[in-house]
Length: 196
Picture 1 (cartoon, rainbow, N blue to C red):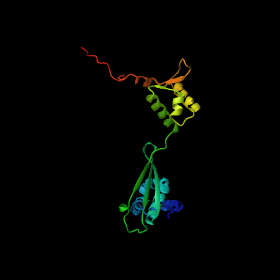
Picture 2 (picture 1 turned 135 degrees about the horizontal axis):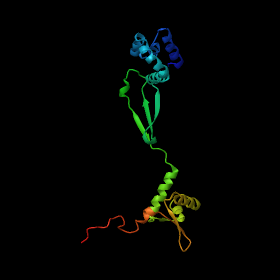
Picture 3 (picture 1 turned 180 degrees about the vertical axis):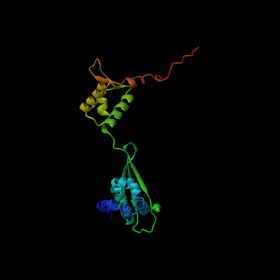
């Protein structure tokens, strides 16, 4: 395994004219020769490598572990917060090419947000009950207590998505105006303007 400290020490050899020696140490022989004869690409490449050494050492150590037959787990953050887990297993025989080894990819869905799930439950029930929902109906059709159901529906009123209404019997009903139009059988159809 390669050491970051040794790589930095070899990088310092450029101060005495030995540019690129750290690249030989890290197995990058072609660029090592290039750096040696161009004085580290006129010092620019040598300066850039000063910041890249930790990553180059990690990459070389990872390659060494794979050649030794180690199992390597790499977690990559994918799109939309999905975590992609890549597992590679290589046999301890270094003679087999790395390309022919199997690659297993697992995509894990992002964790569910309990608040979003609750909102979806409330909205589905509001649609089912044609835009009118009581805390009792919400509690009966979900895992919420009656008090939690009442607080959740009050949050919809505070945000302006629902209206609270009290019936003559004293029952509190939460109305969702976006779902009230589903009462009529053809409420979503446009009127025909060309009637003759």
